[in-house]
Length: 53
Image (cartoon, rainbow, N blue to C red):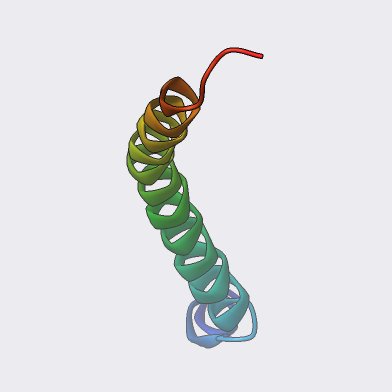
């Protein structure tokens, strides 16, 4: 029973996909955080360029 458990690879693929999805999610979160600040600054500068109504 222990030998069969150690050689069973049915759950391995799902764990690998979960790890890959987690890494992709972390990259997306960091990228959006970094780009979001820069985009916010650009919109602030554009808004400051318009005359007050």
